[in-house]
Image (cartoon, rainbow, N blue to C red):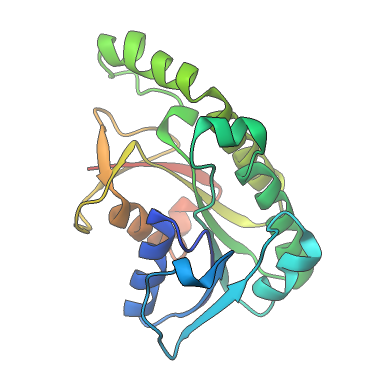
Length: 216
């Protein structure tokens, strides 16, 4: 496939780029600063510098002619999300550009606290952990919730991947999944496994139009 990756210099995004290249795909990595992309030059890797991913006209050239789009965009912290939301405005532009370009398949990373807790989740997690996370990162999760709503209202064949806490540990490929739910007892997952889930969802019809919880 020909895949465009937004947020390619982030922890999840760079793993998407690496794994997509390893799988034989042609990748367009969208970055603000090419120097921050720690992926060696490759004949199937194209680096596109885009300084404003919220502008449809700027985004259109990097999605045109592609088979799928992956977004690993998101604010780095709650303060950034409060000052200038990233994911929601960016996905509004990206989905509009995809519609104009006739590109349908889209996957994007969100976060587990945006979704509903499993009924089987423990009392401590339900009463303490998630309420605390949602309070501390309120603006970040609000931005991701807007992103999810934008995707659901678009004409794309979309999938949202919702991980819990991210770790910089090796790729395992053995994570758990839950369609339209969070993984019961899911606490952590390697960034590399989130990248795996984002790419795998592109060719898995069972994920189309759904939020997918993932966890180790």
